[in-house]
Length: 300
Image 1 (spheres, rainbow, N blue to C red):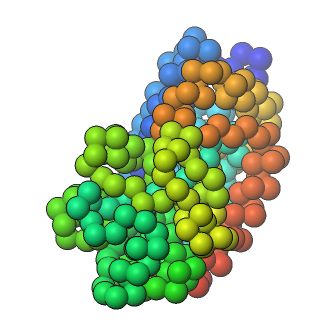
Image 2: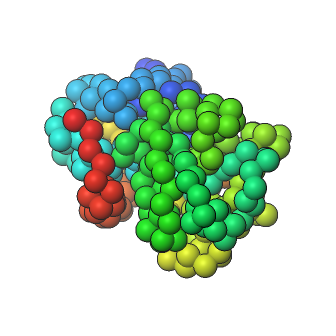
């Protein structure tokens, strides 16, 4: 089965709307895999319920490798702690196939914001009521705000939206003060000057934006959040098929064109084998579960 895989089109299901980091990385990889396999690899966006709608579709799909899930730490490591009841188990019902990349999130504000650095943001937050928007309670951009509050000893006020796009619209419209968001989703707006980046959340600067400092550089030395993105298959997908996809993905992650396209999004290629990916997922479920518990976020 693995030797002949794939002999028909493959679908990569993205459980978020078009335009975000998961969608951008999935489309880069879909085109490259299509070229490598000589079979169409299509991206299917199924947004809803914080990613759970799309995840359930993949969890209940035939375990043959022809339906893959483009997931990331936000849906796969956080939702189990956030939702009281899920129609699937994030570990049991999915087989880790291959990581694709890590990419930092970034604090963005309007160009006319009175603060340009993390220390200035912290000072403004201590002197007034600053608001930050997110894609909803328990989303990565919500939890990053809570982590920042704890690290900087401030109280940014969380304003949840039904998705990251409405939050960004209100940021641009002046209804909120800042947003923590993935670099790919705002890379164009930053380059065009429509948004000002304050700092990235990873321990080192993003190659695509070397002039943007890290939060850690500003004195919050232990702040390091660099979420992974990767491909999963239904839980009972045969191991030889998983190994075949993993090997082909890892080969593409060495392709200079893929590396360049990822870096243009602010992402850094990350290659692992399925076992390493499973350990990474298990570790992050524990890590982010603690963050969710500390934040008090729940979605019923």
